[in-house]
Length: 194
Image (spheres, rainbow, N blue to C red):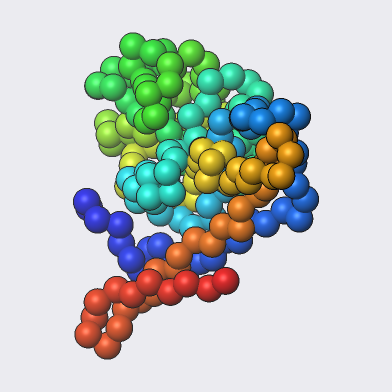
C-alpha cells in the first residue's frame, strides 16, 4: 500500500515541551546532538512509519553502536518496535553486504537475536524490528508494530538571538497533527489540538 492509511494513523497528539532554556556558551554554537529518538506508540507497517517519520523530517531509528541500541530499547519501553534496517537483496547474512540503514548510515553494528536474520519461511522478511530486550529480528514489512523515530534536533530546538552575544536554544513546543476519520463527504480531515 503506497499511501498512509488515515484510519491507521489514528487520533494522536504528542506535545513536547521542556520548561527550561539551554544557553549556548558563544554565538553560533550548535547543539551537541544532531538528532534525538522519539517513541511512536501507534501500530503501523514499516512503510507507514517510514512515511510519517519523513513528514516529520526524520527517519526510523538507525543504530550504529551499542549505546544507541540501548537508548532505542529504553525509549521503546518494553515494546517491539520498527527500526530502519532494510535487506539489500535476497541473502540471509547479517552484515553490510546484505543490510543497509534507511537513512544511508553505514551498517557497522548489529545486535541480531541468535539465529537471525533468517528470512523465516521465505516470507520476505526484509525489514528490522527490535525486540523488548534490544535484540534484532528480520520481519515482513507488513507487520504492524510501534516504532522509534530519529528526528533532527532542529525539529526540537529553535535558536533565539538574545541582546548579548550569546545565543539561546529553547525547546520548541511541538504538536503533531492528528488525522481524523474524515468528514461526511468521506474525505480525510486534519485535526489540530494545542
